[in-house]
Length: 485
Image (tube, rainbow, N blue to C red; front, side, top):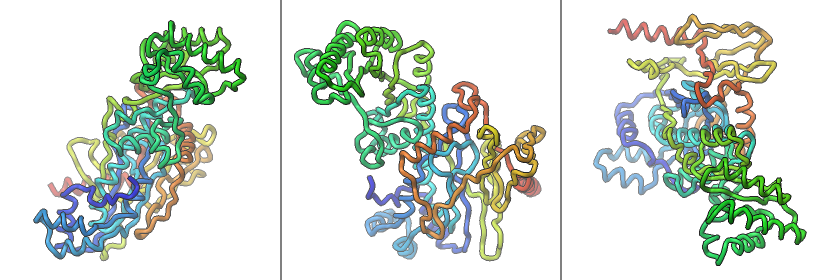
């Protein structure tokens, strides 16, 4: 996974367009924005993840001799263009929102400023990395929220849609809020905690359940989570687990990291009964973990029912984001500059679907926080070169319904610019934090959300507004397009 050349992971039309640009040369430098239009699961926010993989991809961008031979075999590309590809590498700039950041629709998560052929080629891979991992991280954040501080483990390896989805999905899940994963390769690649218990087959391979439990406890006395639903949770599994825990205690074994896992049945009822039995035997601090097709909605419901579960193993519904299968990120041209222009010329895509109209120009994002609480008041998309002074009043308005306005009074808010330099002139200038450091950043980011924006149903939407200068530019482009009609 770490030593693959992914340059050819692009759509054919990117290469055919590149050949067209090559045959009709210009010195265009362009700006492309990668953004999304709708929060996953109709939630109030998303988590941006995938930058580390984009960096690796851009660093290694080159066409191997085998790649050139394959492209030649398609009989679409001329020899001079293929010769150009032999020396191809990325020479542009990239700006991005750091991984683990809370983000909202329509704001650029990543911006490519590069010669048009380079910016065109990288579109599919950039979107692939951003879309998949941001989706899984956002879903993990929701699952972790529903668990209300309990441990959440990512258990989705065997149900993921391929190896990349399994490993990068687990990475994203940990960033979003999971405390660990069952996927050992993800642990090795990214330095995240790996956790697990045992399967029903372990129990069934022994003459009886009690012998299976005793054998496991001897092998792993400090990580003894026993699966109690192979035969009967309350009549067999929990009583046998209690016998083993009692034997461990009497043998002087320090009781830490021990407990039970329930993988089927009525989890609320069974966990409450199991807790009562464990507590009566003096094991009230035992972990009671649950799995079985969990998602944020079921976990939230079980919490409301008073389930005595304090660790959750979430698999299929997290790693596949069941019910919301795609993030929906897009990559759009927003500005062009040539040698005879000192400034970028803004470009806009119009559509009869209002949500598909793009924000033009070379932009940045300012995040505005309430000074007293540290919570997000709004995001302001502005043109590069604009500034926001927190010591001056700031009037915000809804770009779609301009009569809706909010004034932020001087001294009541702080400002942070979200986009940071990642590549300059083709060279990486950004050091990616470790996954666990990104996870810590993501935890802090989620704390900047108001509780109303975290609701699973009808969440409050965070304002994403346009600066006056950007709004006027967009309006002017609308009017110019109308005059052409």
